[in-house]
Length: 67
Length: 395
Ligand SMILES: Cc1cc2nc3c(=O)[nH]c(=O)nc-3n(C[C@H](O)[C@H](O)[C@H](O)COP(=O)(O)OP(=O)(O)OC[C@H]3O[C@@H](n4cnc5c(N)ncnc54)[C@H](O)[C@@H]3O)c2cc1C
Ligand code: SF4
Ligand code: SF4
Image 1 (tube, chains in turn red, blue):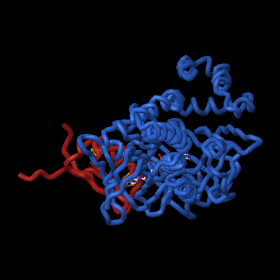
Image 2: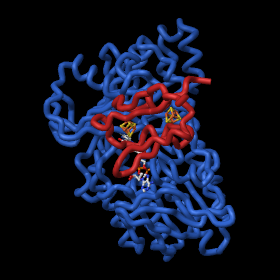
Image 3: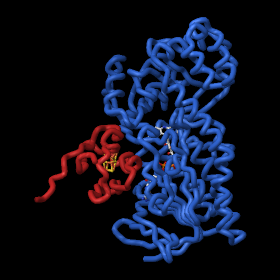
Image 4: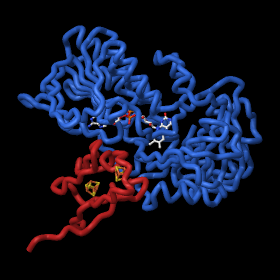
């Protein structure tokens, strides 16, 4: 199992192009006309979206697990 | 709010408006929605398209969305060998997609379709396990759109088809990441499109200059989407290395393009998927407008038949017909892409060098067999069993 992550967007870089939503295997990203949204419970931590973003607006951060 | 239509089409790019127009022309009620508040804007495209599509898909040749007529292409190898293919007649055009997409939606509306901008599909509505409509939002107002047939033409995101249970997943290697400036640029023949190849220049893809004016062009790049570097990194590097100032930028365009992974089952019950959403793009050059028009045409034909004969199982014929025609063609193109992906920079240099000396007319005519034959004749190719093997795979 890969390390559990959350995906974070840099809104100043993001163009809302929808590409990350398109490559995400589990529909864990939604790109609305009003903004970018990440759905943690669907994410499988594959990081496909991070590489695919044409401008590098996405990064993966370790998910803090509450004790 | 709740509406009822015969057909609802999600996405007013290229595929969506073609479907909506054709279905409306046959007299059925259609609603075409797009989440954009201005259809066509922003563009995510280099805007190049073959001249043939206007007649083929019954689209007016309207100067309002044609920036420039193009007479061919020029290819550049990593060390700078050039191959020019110039035709006597116009071979393609560089569109203004902001106007083009809006006009396609306008043609759909004129044919009788309703069109709603800033209307985002959020999910499908199910009743007894069957998809009966789309849950959407117009501005901030929730709407339920009921329809007998649902068309997912929502581009690369392809969320609606997936929510309806159609598998549109493709692995990351089957996508290109793209980045583009619409900018002022000088020194390139504005009657040709220009393409640069090389593993250091644009891994798996190419850099393009598509002229919209004598001194204005879409200058962009596509690379494999599983590349750890960004498309932006490679484009900026190329501009810098070629001393092209990027100081007059009119637009920045970003997008991800499917280049393989064509969806197998294009229909599930009463839901159809078309265009980028169905990964129906030419995997060699990443052009998908003509493919979206073709798929939209086939899909609309079967939607009309199914509604006329009140037999929704006829929709399955869209999958069948697409795979027997354009699907078959694109599968072949995908094979070529997979072979060209293995070419080294030396291969690219050699091949472009050989072809620029070969029978230019036949090559410009797109005689594919002739291209491979010309390459196979050359001693530097004949002496390399690896190159022969690659080329034989292409035949
Ligand atoms: C940088 C770049 C350059 C390109 N250059 C070329 C080129 O030169 N020539 C060429 O032929 N092709 C090119 N392409 C590919 C081409 O743009 C696409 O193949 C084509 O636009 C596909 O049309 P479509 O109708 O399937 O999807 P799109 O044109 O992407 O349209 C989909 C529409 O659906 C809307 N939508 C998405 N989700 C929802 C939702 N939930 N609710 C409502 N609306 C929604 C979107 O807003 C969009 O308007 C390029 C692509 C990129 C990224
Ligand atoms: S791919 Fe990048 S630019 Fe495009 S919507 Fe996702 S984060 Fe934004
Ligand atoms: S890491 Fe994988 S599953 Fe999570 S959002 Fe990115 S692409 Fe989707």
